Amino acid sequence: MIVGIIGGGQLAQMLAMAGQPLGIRCLFLDPAPDACARTTGELLCGDYGDDRLLDELARRATVVTYEFENVPEAGLRRLASRVSVHPHPQALALARDRWHEKRLFADLHIPTPPFVAVDTRADLERALAITGWPAVLKTRTMGYDGKGQRVLRGPADVDGAFAALFGAPLILEGFVAFDREISVVAVRSATGDVRFYPLTENVHRNGVLVQSQARPGDPMTARAEDYVGRLLAHFAYVGVLAVEFFQKGDTLLANEMAPRVHNSGHWTMEGAETSQFENHLRAVLGLPLGATHALAPSGMVNFVGRLPEASAVLAVPGAHLHVYGKVARPGRKLGHATVRAPREPDVQDALARLRVLAEAGGTI
Image 1: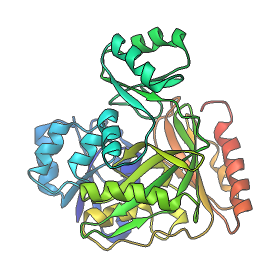
Image 2: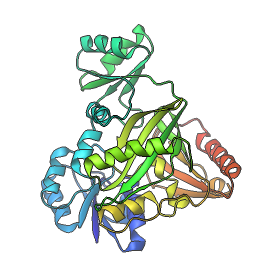
Image 3: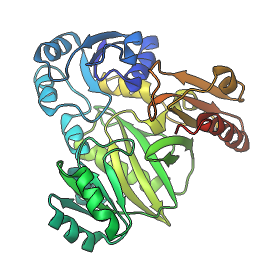
Image 4: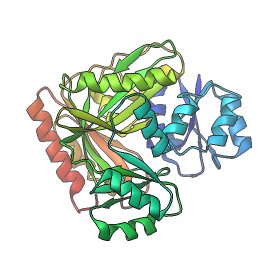
């Protein structure tokens, strides 16, 4: 079995590694000749819109999936006419545009912060009257890891933010003074079998995820799973889906969804019975899904901009290091460490120690 993957970054790399014990090979399409996934499978190096490479991917792959949202829609349509593509391209088309994504949440009665489409400076003034202050101005597409957005705390911020982002369709969202950020990673098979991983509590810095911790039995689990289940059913979804929420009191507000394996699910590599990567492959290939329960208290810390010494990471009890093989530069995710320990206090201690290593040098 060959799984074609659009994108050759670390998520594709980890998908390929999860597939190897199952006899699954991966074939990647990525424009970067040094794409880190190339070490785990064959790389078709070229533009995502290259018809010749897309046709080769469709001809050779059993099924095609993707590792990020900003996949050209025309290329996916071409693939889908020749080979099965999971998750369905419609899910990707909605997830890549924050306006359509929020509209879908609203249609499915999933609460969100207030949001208004913005195309002109006058639109922004009208939108601010709806969202109130503070608010967040974002590009509707091509935004991730904190990119393409500006916080508006007062009138003095408006002109600069609009000038910085104008030129792309925009959306204004109400700023949420949340109590915590959480996510749910779920997987659905083509036969409708749905499995949820334990709710995950996340910490971001400058829009980039720096830490996740699994929270089995969390009191918000049922509500979060209900909301995610509505999305899975709406799309007749196949594969892994992640949804991020802001929690304010006993309310969950949907922030965004990712129709793919997700950074906040990395703890599942050592912390769950079946990792999110293996279950995504199982789902898209029509194989039975694996169990998703946590094996022990678990978490994950990202290494952004620099990698600590491997010996320092591995000296932390319960830590497992994953290095992506990418060239270092500020703001770039270079690797992560998962941690699994017998007791909750041990995980908290390990995560704190890993965060110290991750933040040394102030590069995050």
